[in-house]
Image (cartoon, rainbow over all chains, first blue to last red; front, side, top):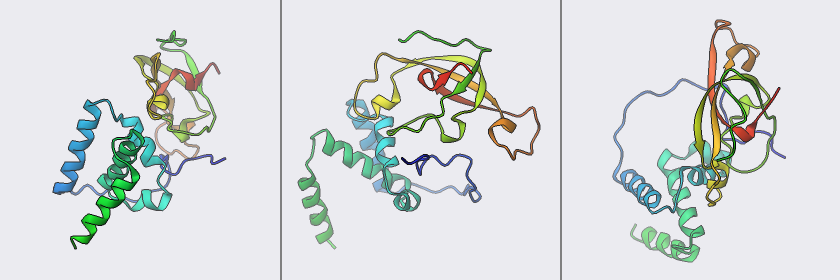
Amino acid sequence: MVMRSHHDMGGLPAGPVDRSEHDYEDWERRIDAMGVVLGQKKLLTVDQRRRAIETLPPEAYDTMKYYEKWVVALGQTLIQRGLITTDELKRKMLEVQSRG
Amino acid sequence: MADPQFAPGEKVRVIDAHPLGHIRTPFYIRGKTGVVERFCGAFPNPEELAQMRDGLPPVPLYRVRFRQNEVWPDYRGSANDVLEVEIYQHWLEKP
C-alpha cells in the first residue's frame, strides 16, 4: 500500500516559488469555462477533478501544466458520465492532429 | 448532518491512516495532535463527492490548531508558531 500519494507533498523540500505573472492562453480560458459549466450542471465537483488529477502518474503530475491537468480531469469525467465515449475522444484527437 | 463530536478548545488527534481515494486530510498532519479552534459547519463528504456520489449526510468540519514544532520535528521558528488545518470529523479522534 502506498503511504503518501505523490500529489500530497506538503512539507517536502521544494524550490523557490515562481511569482512571475503570466496571461492565460485561449485554450486555458476555454478549459476553465468548461469546468465552470460542468460544475453548474452538477456534472463535476472540485473533488472529482482533484481525484482525477491525483491519479496522474507522478512524472505527468510534475510536468503537466495546470490546465493540462484539467483537460485530463474533464475528459475523464465526460467519459465516466457517459457524455462522450473513449472512441469519440480518440477520433476527435486524431482529427485535430491531422490539421497539422 | 452527523452530530458534532468535538467542541472548540478540545484536544483531538488526526487519525493516522492511509486509505485509497481522494483525501482532504494532508499526509503530514496525520497522527498529529492539536486543539479544535472552531467548528466550520458541515459539508458533503469530499471523499464521496470525488467518486461521483452525493456525500450526504454532511460531515462536520473543524479548524484544528497545531504547534508547528510538533508538526515538523526540525522546526526552527518560534515555539509559539501554529498551523491551522481544516479537517473533517471522521478524520479526528480523542487522543
